[in-house]
Structures are given as structure tokens and as C-alpha cells.
Length: 238
View (cartoon, one colour):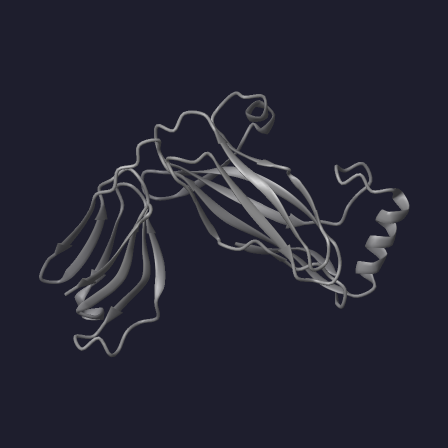
């Protein structure tokens, strides 16, 4: 999820790259190191925020802020980022560590946002007043847009169980996730019978209890790479 946060011309500006838009914290891990690259030509001052994605019964989502102070003190359940402020030089790389704390009884999903900002007086970037003004004036002399990005971190349960079912009827195929952790249908394509005409490949995530259905009229063959944790399987449904 990208968004424009500061309107400003395209000469000197930071441009951040957060790599993968989905990260997975397996049952045997509690941390991920997320690298942030700045391919622009001025320093990027990046704020990191984390919220939990909660799914309703009909699939609607709600984002809930986390108690970062409580998590940092060792209490509660959630994902924290450390550090939450990054200074990334032009052409450089910095990293923040995503750490999950608490019980892993069910799978949890988090949105991690990386937002370039203009440093302000009294913020945690701790720039001297002269440095801050010089940086802001340099951007305003010719910048277009500072763009932030959001990635999803999926924290798998402590004991992941995968159970993917493929069902066929006269009119459609369906892929159902009866396990307790998200599966990925990577390179998903629906094709004609000869597999010469296919839709553009896509990626679909299927949460526990969820399913994906395919109408055979759109193509009698479905092809994808099934990813269940560290296991991958090439699947063709006819």
C-alpha cells in the first residue's frame, strides 16, 4: 500500500524500497530483519508504525494500534519494530527488526508502515535546528512527493498445521484452507484446455478457514504454485 504524504518537485528526493510486501514469521522464529533502501538522492527520515489487522466474520478488516510501550516492557501480545525511526542516506540501506512477543496460539497479521517524513523540531530524529531547516529547504527547492509504503507481516501460530483441499464440481474448482495458517497460491493462472491462453499470473493468500473459487467458464485449467510454509508444490487443476 503506497501513499503520498508530502506534496513537494522531482529533483532531490528520497525514494525508499522496502523489498517484499509480505513477510512471514514461521513457527520457529520470533524476529525478522527488514531492510529499507533509499535509491533517491537525498537522505530519507523514515518513521515505522505497526498495527494489527483484525478480520470480521464476513471478511471486513479493522486495524488496531498496538501498545508499543507495553510490548517493549515485555507485556501483551504483538509485533514491535526496533528502531521505529530510521535515517537512510541517499544510496544507502538501514534495517529495523520486527519482533513478536506473546503467545502464538493463533495466526496474526500486522501492517507495518514505512513513512518518509520531513524532520520536525522536537521529534526523535534529533536534528539540530540548522540541519533540519537546511534539509527542508533543499527538498522544497525542487521535490515532488515523499511516498510511504505498507507491508504485511504474517505471524504463524506456534504449531502450524497445513491442510489444503482441492474440490471440483461441474461448474467450478475451489481451493480451501482447512489448516491454521495462511497458504499462498503463487503464479496463479486460469487457462484454456490447451494451456496456451492464460490470464496474467497473480498471487492469492488464503487465510485459515478461507477458500478461493474458480468458474470453469473463465478457463477449465487452473495452475499455481502452492506454498505451505516452507513447502512448495506445483499444482494443476483440470
